[in-house]
Amino acid sequence: MAVQTTSRSGGKSVGSAVLGVLLTLTIFVLTFVGFLLAPLALLLVAFLVWTVVRPRQGGEQPTAAPADGTDQPEAGHRGRSATDFGAGAR
Figure 1 (cartoon, rainbow, N blue to C red):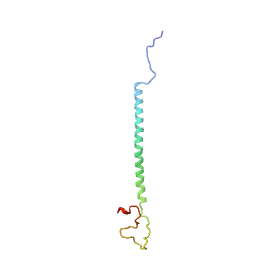
Figure 2 (figure 1 turned 180 degrees about the horizontal axis):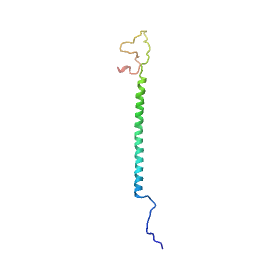
Figure 3 (figure 1 turned 45 degrees about the vertical axis):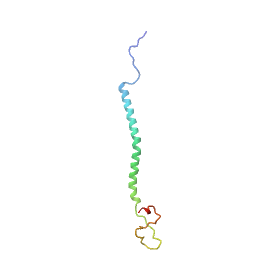
Figure 4 (figure 1 turned 90 degrees about the vertical axis):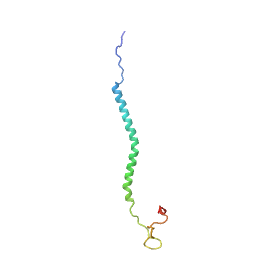
């Protein structure tokens, strides 16, 4: 009859298990923070691109001559018709 005096499990040591848990939590936190920050970073990049491109689009547009044949637009009219966007905002 054989008596087993030592019991050895095939699992990890306590230190190895703690290290595994900490590594798993670190990966989870980094992934979670990445998914939280990625949309904000994308919005920041889009805003920076918008601010760089916007001044280039804001150049002076050539205006057509008024229909009455005069070369100068009416005072306060600034060459825009009443149907232009924002015409009533002034």
